[in-house]
Image (cartoon, rainbow, N blue to C red; front, side, top):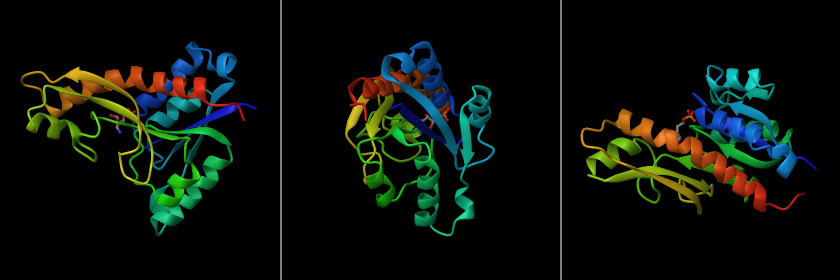
Length: 197
Ligand code: GRF
């Protein structure tokens, strides 16, 4: 059975694109029987959707604004995700807090990338906070998603230096280039260790 990967985005989708590119160049279909089956966004204007469409990947939009509650949105999102029978659900710049029920439904097959060296700086504005704290290194973390925001078991990390004069934007750009290496590698490690269903 194919190991389907479903990727959730909200914006640029550069991490998603890095994973799709590595799936192709790393021959994940041959090596792991895996493929990126769908890219789903909560925003129809997410730039990453066009990239996915051009690659022939199914895209879907589930707008959170169409739902009265977090629970209703998560239920609709789950329904769309589950049509693709995912072995792995990858959050890649997906800017929604998920309900405990959603997280439990995907226990063990839901991962996220967060732009800090967790457990430092969970939440938003990570780069500004790292600069304000005087950190000499910053980075990104791939972790399993649990009900505690940004606090699931750590799967992989990459560190970059914080340079004198860094702005949140310059630091974010330096971290993002490492995210593009780290996240595909972490997904590949997951595929290599997960038992075929
Ligand atoms: C990344 O920095 C990711 O860590 C954070 O949001 C950004 C998403 O970038 N959660 P992209 O959409 O993958 O380009």
